[in-house]
Amino acid sequence: MIYSRPELSGVNFLHFKDILLADFGIRISYSALSSILKNAGFESPKKKKIRHRTHRRKRKPHPGQLIQIDATPYEWFGGTIRYALHGAIDDATGQVVGLFMTQNECLYGYLETMRQCCSDFGIPQTVYSDNHTIFRSPKTDKLSVDELSAGKTLHLTQFGRSLHELGIDLIFAKTPQAKGRIERLWATLQSRLPVEFAKRGITTVSEANRFLETEYRKLFNQRFAVEPEAESIFVPATKDLNLDSILCVKHTRKTDAAGTFSFKNRCFQILDEGFPSSMPAVRLPF
Image (cartoon, rainbow, N blue to C red; front, top):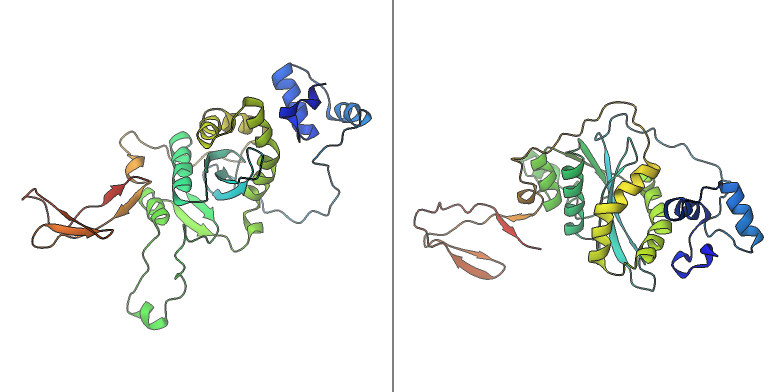
């Protein structure tokens, strides 16, 4: 029986219905499939529960108006080892505009997720995140009245600076429930992705990222995305826009009279005599 295959262990009935159609050309209603499997002694790992629904915020009308971004750790390849999946979802359509996996939640994962979004869909108007220090300085809102009066400001985080350069507004959610769109996305992906990885023999982060970007995002969006109420306001990334020079880590240093500067406890010297005294931003590899 197809449902008993090891790679389909843990698949819920609705996902199994999609697999039957996509992989085997078998079209069957959910109720009929559920009856067959239950009569055979199987129970869906993800049962539908009757619950009182709370009011959900209405979707934004325009694609690109609001992108929710977050990361979740999970045992994506089975076993006990968790990896962090970074994701971004469009509020208007429910389209996943970026997915990238790393060992832990990190700046690199979020920058790569935004690169996918900007390259494949365009530059959004606003990004909605939690209060992780990757997005927001822990000193935010802690400046005294005297410091504010003196014009003191806080430096943006590397992620905040990247979005500022792209002209994207960054706003912060106070609770997980405030960004429910992406929280529900995690529940769906945690149910479906491990099965998709097992079907394809994917067991490494690099293999997973290749599958997520080249295949899975498109498959997911075809299955779950909805039609927007209004036209898209994603701004296409122009050919002369170098995303790699924006979605990166930048540091600024100044040279002394001898043309040297320090970085990470190391000293560097500029040999070009015509080099300006103020160092430009230096891009570092991750």
